[in-house]
Image 1 (cartoon, rainbow, N blue to C red):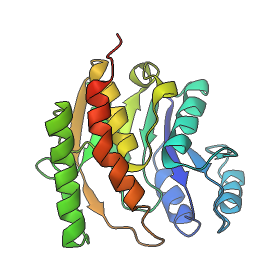
Image 2: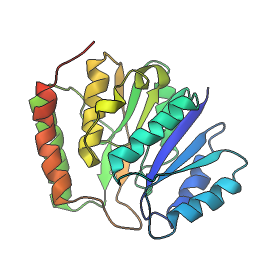
Image 3: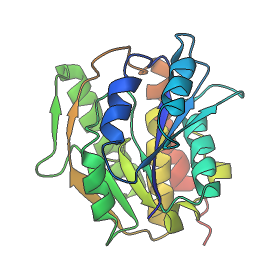
Image 4: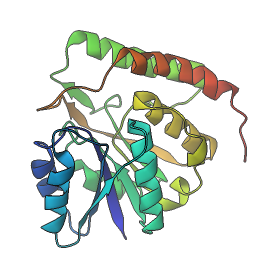
Length: 235
């Protein structure tokens, strides 16, 4: 196995050291930090961590247009070129428990993609205000209603892909960003016939920094399911 976890960053300098320490406690796991022009020095901190990691941490400094989805697509292309056998996605803000990466990797023994899910039995959310809980639950219901996806947590950003499935995803036609990006990737995985499982996780609100939620992100998330429904399904 050559497992790798992609962590996109934007102003996450204070979260990187504890996150990296926890991830590198998993034997054999590699880490790719994709920094998106962070003005707070995250890129320099990522370079320092990489130098001290014994070759287990790499850094990709993006120079193109900023964007969460664009960062992930660049990171996924890097991971496929590096010949990773399993490609994991997770946030840099410590809302995802790094120890759960082991569970996602284990789940891919019988699945093409494992999703860390807040909305299956055993899953939970902590420290979220009521309006965020309502918005997230509605968003997932809305996506399922429009697209026909059966995934309970379509917007989860905590995932592990087997290389075979991710390499077939048409990354060149992924256009969305933010939470919509996660929905679009899940839809593509389902259209390709990928075996998808959901593993219960506890999602904890970020410890430091600011949420990337915005009105533009919400608007994109509302429109995307209809675009997916109309998208031709190529084999």
